[in-house]
Structure formats: structure tokens, C-alpha cells
Image (cartoon, rainbow, N blue to C red; front, side, top):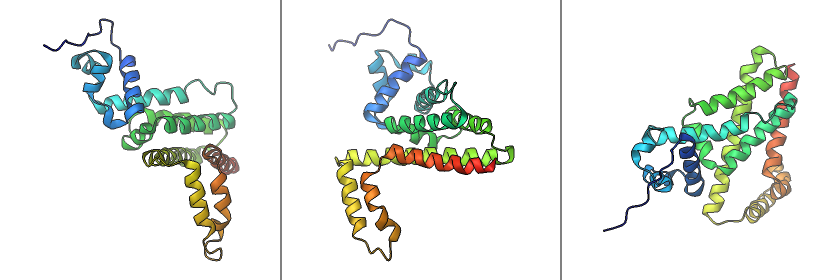
Amino acid sequence: MAKRAQRRTDGLSKELIVKAATGILDDGGEAALTFRALTAHLSTGYGAIYHHVANKSDLLAAATDDLIDRVTTGVVVDAEPRAALRIVALGLFDAIDDHPWVGAQLSREPWRPALLKIYESIGGLLDALGVPEPALFDSAGALVNYVLGVAGQNAANARALTAGEADREAFLATVAAQWAQLDPARYPFVHKAATQLREHDDREQFLAGIDIFLAGIAALR
């Protein structure tokens, strides 16, 4: 008879389950996260998992919440609001870049606590920056949508390049060459942007967008 796998004898916490789930998600994406894979990884039974999380949706939400918590909690205590907003925004960009499934989860289930934490963090910093209350809701919504939209698209682009085994630098060089060959009379901006497309850094461009937002928001004061 096949030898049974050794079951763990130490206590199983939700934190350990979330950590294991995050590792599985990072290695194989959402398709790889099954309760069977999780029980094998943790050397435990289904009952022990279900004692802490109800289903895969709750597990994805908990893993997302854990990562967003790390970005929005305690990292900007001593920073002035403008600098703090840049830190939080870049932290979210990097978290979604490192863990692409986070962006998908945030857009699929926006009522979960993770998105509320993002709004609370960014909205609170905008309030500290002196944005007038009538403009606060729209300002926070615009900035959150920019951060999550750009971060999610960047993560999707990275996944597409990885799946196609393409090199980012070579891909951008090819696209830039195609842009440069376009008729400058019909595509004047695209023709001018070809060189910058080839050389641009995604994180720096993202932060440039944050600074544009903050400059516009400063005018509201």
C-alpha cells in the first residue's frame, strides 16, 4: 500500500494558510491554487483549511488583503503627504507587478477589505494634503483608478511577454521601429514618442503620472 504523507502536528493558523496560498499563486497563478494543492503543501487535511477559510474566493481575498496591508500600513508615518502618496502608489505598483493575481482580485471583487484600505490610505493622505472636501471623493477615485489601472496593465504586459518568451527590450525596440516608420503628418505624436518608447522605464513613467495627478490636485487648494 502507498505510504501516507506525514501530517503536521503543529497548530495551523490562517496566517500560515495565507502565506502558503501566496506562494502557490506566485508560482503558478490562480489556476494552481486549489485546496488539494494547499493541503499537500501544508501537510494537512481539508477540514483544517476550511476551519479558517470558507472557499477559494475567501482565500484569494485574504492573500490580497495581506499584501495590501503591507503596502498601506506603517510605511509613511514620518513622510509628508505628497511624499507619502508617492510611496503608497509605488508600493501598490510594485506589489501588483510582483503578484499579478492581486490586480485581478481587486478588480473582480472590489467590495473586499483590500480595496477599502487602498481608498482609505490614498483618501486620507489627500485629505492631509489639503484637498477641499467637495473634491476629495473625485480626487481619491481618480488617483486610485490610475494607480490600479496602470499597475494592472503593466502586470498584464509582463505576463504576456513571459508567456511568449519575449524580451521586453527587444519588444519595445520592435514597436518603436514600427512607430518611427509611420507617416509623421498623420501620427505626429506617435512619431515623436518612438524614441522614448524604446528607452522608457515603466516605474518612472508611472511616478511621472502620479506627479501630474498631484500637480492637478494641488491646484484645487
